[in-house]
Amino acid sequence: MNIHEFQAKQILGRFGAPVPKGQPAATADEAAAAFTALGVPKAVVKAQIHAGGRGKAGGVKLVASADEARTFAAGLLGKTLVTHQTGPQGRVVRRVYVEEASAVARELYLGMLVDRKAGAVSVIASTEGGMDIEEVAAKTPDKIITEVVNPLLGLAPFLARKIAFALGLKDKQVNQFAGLLASIYKAFIETDASLVEINPLVVTQDGRVICLDAKMSFDDNGLFRHPDIRELRDPNEEDADETEAAKYDLSFVHLDGNIGCMVNGAGLAMATMDIVKFYGAEPANFLDVGGGASTEKVAAAFRIILSDSRVKAVLINIFGGIMQCDVLAQGVVEAARQVKLSIPLVVRMEGTNVDKGKKILAESGIKVISAADMADAARRVTQAIGVGA
Ligand code: GDP
Ligand code: MN
Image (cartoon, rainbow, N blue to C red):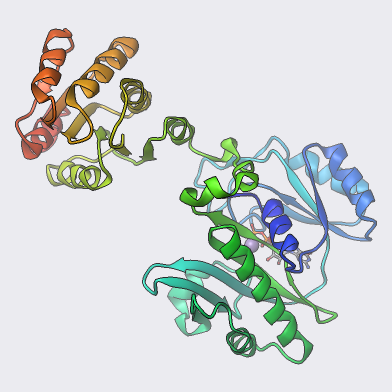
């Protein structure tokens, strides 16, 4: 789960990381009031969307009066901001963040993430801050510093100082940076974060090291331990179908193809996507309905798949272990009746209560293409949309 910049800064600030003071605003008048309340000569007004690249896209502006803050906020709020990270459809700006302006001397990059290869948390840092870090990594990989944090030692001060020196920090900044990094690491571990990105981390003209931008992502599977963070979920920033699926505890991810897939078990779901591709079509989604899915859950899953107008055929691939084929069949029949199924439906079922399941489908009056095995199912579903062999 992702959160907004101002929320990430609030969390990091609570853990002791230096962040500029600021206030979120949902209207132009609130933005003007925020400027006045901050009591600073200059502020930055920043669009709050779950995407970076706002600076270059006109979503960040330095202002020197409440009126200027109001005018800029009025121009942003309710508008769609297109940045290189939003895709061409952009994102609607529903809030801005008004923050005390900083006099920037240097822009650095600091990231922290769950490094699967290292099996630990890694710190990524670079002197090339404020830029697209993927581009820096591609063009000048030697400018990226990566340090793995030993999970038992935690973020040792020597490691923080090593990174500080590599970033060219001097004197008091070295210890400031070490303190900042320790705060971020503590926040990262204690909130079950998967990513923290400070781009840029800046050295101000008066020599302070502060977080000028902040992005935080959290492990969805850790959110039950953090009800306060879970509250920060912004449905406006998320895929509506994925949000709907989450309500039913379904693992659903939108993809770009046109074969809707309903599968139980993540491994079988991956294999199903592979075999659909092998036969020449593209899956429209990843969907794992889980082990002991109820009729209601199956019906919800089927509705979500069919609500996507790009879906031209559906492939149901179920292995009945804990999941029972008759329960699945009942859910499919209910959902198919509700939505008046009008596209080809291929079903491959195997396992517990498979005969009962097949009987329910056969007697339902719904047009079902039965498949003998996975390969047969993939072949039939691709043929149904006129591709494949
Ligand atoms: P992003 O473009 O979405 O990543 O948004 P950022 O928060 O990184 O802001 C973009 C750029 O605006 C930064 O890289 C800075 O160069 C600039 N910027 C943001 N806040 C300030 C500030 O307080 N003072 C100055 N001088 N520049 C700022
Ligand atoms: Mn940034």
